[in-house]
Image (cartoon, rainbow, N blue to C red; front, side, top):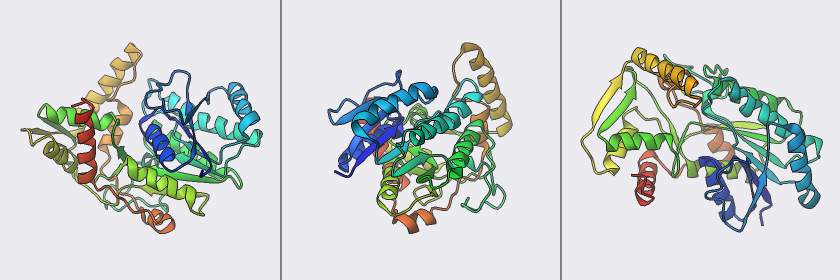
Length: 336
């Protein structure tokens, strides 16, 4: 047994994958879920479930105290719980920052600080920098998030980094894709219907990370003697806006596809209108002001040299291999 590990946000795409990876690696695995979480994929008898309410510190204290009575603490915590879409922009900070703060404060208060606390952040923390020179974003750059999501992740990072001697590792992945992921699935579904949509007319440099490589990086961080560091995570390559869609088209059997490049001004109007109407329906919209800023960003390169040098990280899935795995899974499961 490699010790105990708690994965929060275990019902989500990334959290669910990390649960299965931790089981393969021989950890005593705990899945942190909300009362309303789907338990699909968490039914195995060797997965321990624990309900955690990060929004209410008093409730969270009781939940963690009950665990402590019989189990003491987790050796490792991988905190993936958070939101990427919200009806109200203020909710990003409430969940991604305040929820994380409540969790860590309660752990410390109860003497349950883990040996390592892994925080899953995002490349969006840095925002649209080096847009003209298109240099890779590095740790030396100053974060300039231009979305509510990116800002909430930055607030959480700054809080974690401000804690003296707190044993954290922060990971900032770029676009994560893999089985069960739904945003890139929409792209595959659109291409299957013969339409590929791209944002903007100018050159855009994209980076991606297959979920298994993200898991590799996280567990290397747990195993290696590193602490209080932050890492960007990608597959090490840079792609054009057409590369992903062309590979999907190939794996779907090369269907006829109409490639549409939407001018940013039109995309902005559509996104703001979608956000406006979604606010009246009480639902979050896939297209909104924040999503527009993400699609508008031209430079998504990042420097993964520290991850390679410190942890020995070696990506196993370049985009062609990863897309093949994903499309095969979508077909097998009847999604496509």
